Image: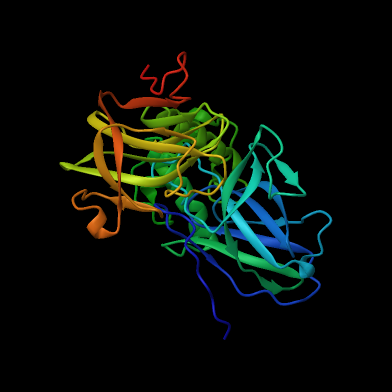
Length: 357
C-alpha cells in the first residue's frame, strides 16, 4: 500500500495535501482536487533545476477537481512543485499561513510568469508557496486538498454551501457535509429570493456554480462590514502582527504578509468595544528576517511577545525566557465593528501611519 504524506498549508483553516512522491512517466497535466469546505484560489510554481515559473490563479469550488496544464513544460522533467493559496475576503475563519519555505512572484490577476524568482512589474508581488507532492497516475500528477473533516467530493460540495450560508446568515446548520430538511428549506428560500431561474434540483450537483456565486456575494456583503483591514501604501512587502483583547488577554497572531498597494483583512470577527494592537515592518526582500533592521517600522509603546515563525501568543511576560522576541505595539481603542489601518512612510510629513476613518 502506498504511503500518503500530509502537509499543513493553512493556519486557521487546517488543510492537508494528500499526495505521493513523483514517479518519472509521461504525465501531461496536474490534477488538483478540493475536498475541503472552502473555495480555494491556487497558484502553482514549477521548478526545473534553478529556474522557477509560476501560473495562476485557479479557482476550485468544494468537491471539484481541475486539470492544470502548464505551457512549455514537460512535467516529468520538473524537479519540484509548489502551491500558494490566496486569501478570500468573504470567509470569517480562513487565514493563509504566512511562514513558508519558498517565495515566488505572482500577479494579482490571472498570470503566467516564466521567471517567478524576481518581480518585475508593479502589479506583481511575492507570495508564500509550500512544496507539494503528486502521485503519477494515468498520465496525471494528482493531489487532493482536504480539511480536518476528510469530506468526500459530495460532502465537500454540500459543506461548502453550508459554510457560505452560515456566514451570510442564510442558515445556521452544522457544517458537516450532510443533507438535511432544515438546510434544504433555508437554501431553497435563498434560491427563490436571489436566483429565480435556478433549478433547486441542481443545488447539490456540480451545476451549482451560480448558487455558489450568489452565496459568495451575500457572504462578502456581511464580511465587508466587520473586522480589521490593513492596507499597504508603500512599494515594499509589509509583514505584520495583529491582535485584540480576548477574555482579558491580549492575543496576537502573525506573521501576515501584505503585498504592496493592497489590503488584507487580518481580523475577521466584529471588533465591537475592544483594543486592537499592531506591529509591522517593511523589507525589500520577500522573506521575513526579524533580526534584520527593516526599511520601515510601525508600532508603539505596548511591549508584547512575537516569534520568528507563524504564531498565536496570549501570554506576554518574560518573552526572552520563552525564546520569544519583544516588540513595541501600537494600540487603538475602538467601539465599532469595522476598522482600517493604512501603512505609509512614517517619515513622510504628508502621510499618516494610521487612518482611522
